[in-house]
Length: 98
Image 1 (cartoon, rainbow, N blue to C red):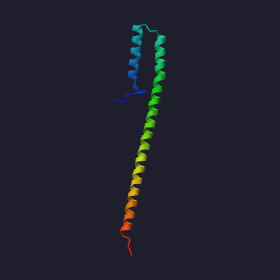
Image 2: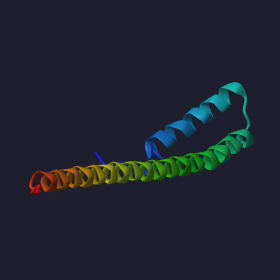
Image 3: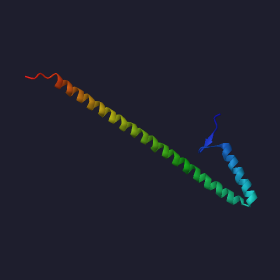
Image 4: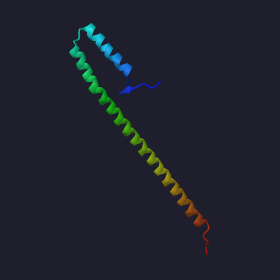
């Protein structure tokens, strides 16, 4: 089931949150202004949290690629050293001593 998501939450989850805040406001005696201020704070906080997660994912991906590049460079250098040692051993083995 493909649902529309807003900052990691489905529309139904956001509507349930608004209803719960409204019920708590009625029970505890909150005014409508306080509920609107709470929603304003959430509307500012959730995009900030989403941006933080996006930035974290970007830097995590960059770090992963750098790690892979380092691994491949070490692998290539190791292969070059092994090939050089093998070639040097071949030339020493086949050298004719006079």
